[in-house]
Length: 141
Image (tube, rainbow, N blue to C red):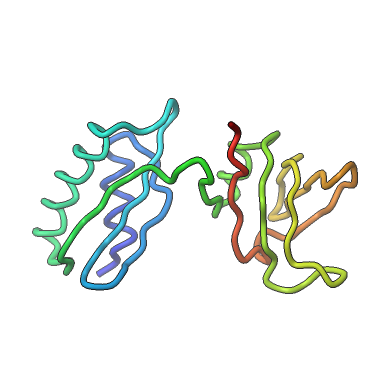
């Protein structure tokens, strides 16, 4: 049973973007969704109701379900995420240090063929997407 695949299929079928999911202690299953213009309580309720039905049919085990937006510091995981947020600032951590540094903050310049180009203080840095441990948008306030 592919939990991520079931969630993604359901969420995208409802017209939302599937960002991520996580399992936490005591049977908690968290699902993060997004859409242009942001997510509201009604969106979370609609996805939660549908996922509850899908999980019952597919026999996916959980005790509690939380559906929410990814927040202002949204994680970026796929190349499409980096493309969508080109021109925005991102904070990322590399799996392996580069010149003794693992953490970078910079503006997304471009992404192509698995390589992300960041502008870090006026210097273009190319990073392999596969080498990124985690990346989050820097909130714009």
